[in-house]
Length: 201
Image (tube, rainbow, N blue to C red; front, side, top):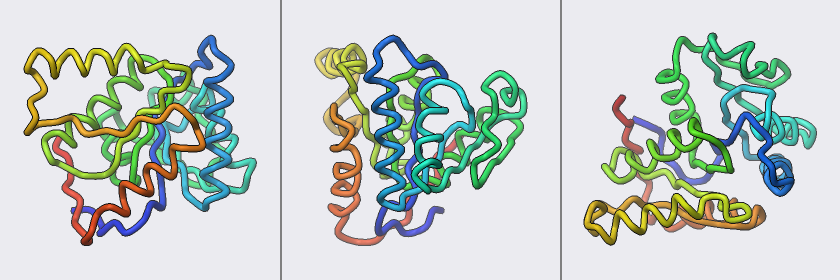
């Protein structure tokens, strides 16, 4: 079981190990890193030094914030493991990585990314849908990046595959400065302390 959550202390950020083609993506990653540090909220991420992953981590560190990187040993070279973070955890496989990222975070943000980012985001949406936890999950739709996924989710509802009693609950924001307030508001809406359920792998 997780700890009772009264406020957000750490946020897990899922994002690409590439920069993407739109400069707005890396600008958003860097801006969000500064926001985390300025609000004394730690970053939990995949431990790499490439792409948006590296951008958000370096931004947090440059602003004096705390970073926890969690990376499987087989990706240490491939994703250029960032050794300058305050807490670096090398794990055996992707399952352990995702489990620790979940346990250490009080909320989740998906910035633009590729298949890995999509997989991590959808897994969190599934756990929320199945009531395995109720930590807030936010899709950062920077430059409309996640529009096709959001349209697909709407299509799934229209076709009866996401039923009203099994909603995939998530937040959407398209401006970086709105991400943290949305997560904080979601936590504040919880009227009583609770024990977060641990997802099953």
